[in-house]
Image 1: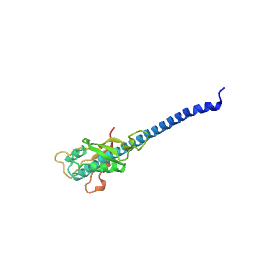
Image 2: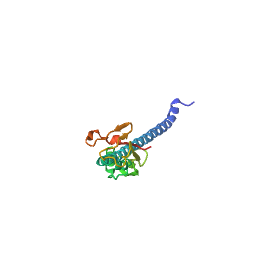
Image 3: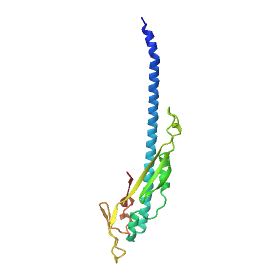
Image 4: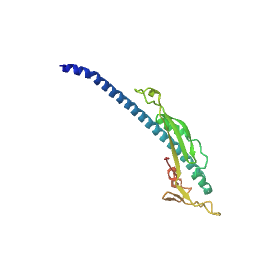
Length: 196
């Protein structure tokens, strides 16, 4: 006849092994969670940086449109994004830095699109998974500038002072260069959003 105390003693090493295995799995899941959070932070930084680059270009295009307001023949090139603009990547870098990341790539992805790639400043951190303390997440995003306005080009011989109406979505603008407060702003002329 065996004593009950002896059976309990034999089960203890198995119990320890199971508990150690469960603890290892918990730490491994924690490492996966840390990596997911880090990756999410990288994507947030990439989205913000791409939107910042596109918004910077939207502002530049609006400024150029205001400069040629009295010459409607030049409007379409600006609305199509065919006007020269300064590099918006410095603004993208600022927004990435605010989200603990740095821009590793920034370039036009089309006439009115900007693609930004970032890498997080913070690593995933130390965990039971070897090498995670040096791993930094990367992500990319593309933002698109969409022109919102259309107009009828003036016919030949039209007086230069007669500016065409500008229709932006459902709003019609009767442009008066003498009243800058009544002119459309960047958000009226262009929409900025992340590309699918």
